[in-house]
Length: 428
Image (cartoon, rainbow, N blue to C red):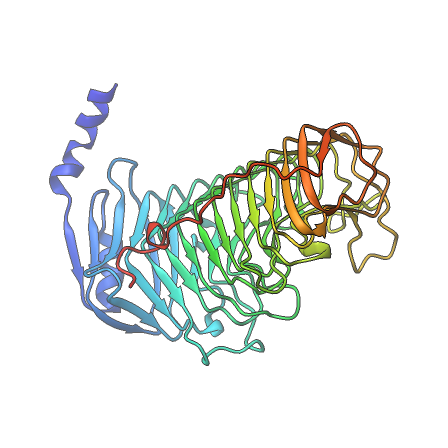
């Protein structure tokens, strides 16, 4: 079978072409002519107000590639945008500078609602807004929209967004099935928006929150992504958040809607910055394990590990009761508000008073010399404790089996991901 596949692809391999492009008209013609294995190469320099509609049918072995002649030196400005639809397409090395929100969303994995991207990749690209150019009152827009299924965003750099609108959104519903990979990107500073809509990544929305997205978000750096309380907003099921580093982020990785997600081996490094948070849990069957949280200052919804109360008969956009959560082998060091159980959500007409059920804290370590380790605002009958080691100013609950209290646990310090391991290789 492998030999047969090779034979069938051999004509494409032999005939793969490099199609150099100098202007928008040439780009349109090259896209129409491109076949599997071809590479469309864009000249260096500025491309102003250029909307790229990259549509094609590549193959897994012979994708169609759209790339910069020199990575980072093909620069799209003004009302430029990228629309990508088809299969096995690769976009590489482009820089979108100071995107104008008048065009709507800047980079989309679709041409339109009927032409989605599948098995496509955005790699080594950048989207940036220079300080002093954008405004919080600009038109709402998003910078990257992942549609379709099985797409990838890697080694990109995204920073500087100021206006309302999530920076990167995974859209679900209909033929938008998820299964995307977002890895080894650098998400740089985003200033506080002052209202909802300032997330850095959102996976789904409340209307599709019970859909299994099965997305993987791993080995990214988030630095000073302070748009709102939710740096990452999970609103779907079955996603994996693994090995990311959060640097001085005034917000949390929030499991806002959806069930069955895993948050593991992430590092949260507050460095004492104001409002820095950790992980917030809402919904059913989530696993939070092996995370390292250090020098975080956030409280309430920005506490280091927060379990929310549920809303009876919650609507899709409300707060579902925490059930069967497993909080396992996490390490918390010098955090001001390590564990909060029973936080009530805001802006709800009815009281959120359903406490966590069948929830297990096992093997966690907390060293918080100046802090109340466990803050409780609900009934703890549904929470079980096993082999936890906590030390701090006060435990916050009566001592009980499953918590070793008072003796400083032995802790292995974890380092953030190296900056050079993420983002475009051409970025300096």
